[in-house]
Length: 304
Image 1 (cartoon, helix red, strand yellow):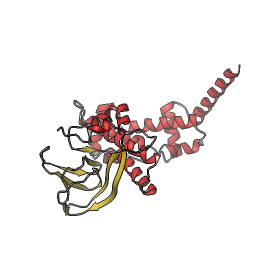
Image 2: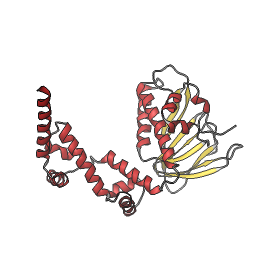
Image 3: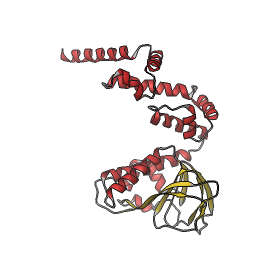
Image 4: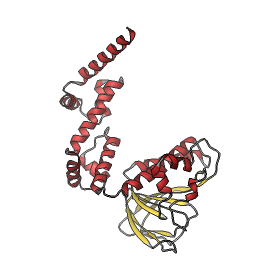
């Protein structure tokens, strides 16, 4: 019998997520005995670090891994494992235990998700009973959202629960694919994660050190990787991102020009105006007026 992460028959039947347990827990100086669950488990490290050991079985060899912030393991039901947190400090984790069952719902089943997304299909048939992976932040947001929704809904399911769980599975599948891409330089993944962080946080007063901390690299090293990959600095990329967002807000919304700087993470209005003019060759006021004029001309042409 071949070992897979999930049950292959999930690609043949219409099954839906059922969560057994979910909880936050901070562990300190703790060594857990080997144990198993009847459900699939995700163990996600929020802060600190911990050791996860997989006991050898007739189907797989023993394995051990140290997980740090943003890293997680997803393991199949009935896989013997244990958690070890040493004296170096506490480890805070979020755990979710689940499987899939038959249920009447309008939401796509795992089989249907796999039919639409090749990454999901490959995740289900992953030839291992566990995976150690690293998250850039997207998965944790889905996990937190799912836990909050489960807290509010109790044992009953909702469309939002189904959507969040689908996002969870799709995110894990994508992380798995990206982590296992042959021929991809790890530097590419760090740069990609840095870009994702900037796209999620450009409205805040973030600096290079914050971006580097988000991907667990030294700022100087990430800067060199970024410039090597994109031929521009992280600050330059962030400025371009902010100015493109500012153009969109000026073009598509009625947000006051004086407030746009706050929406793109530039605290000073004077500095924002200077950045915008340097980037576009015009001022925010003239840019919005030119867009308004173009839209008026288009409407007039449509009425002729």
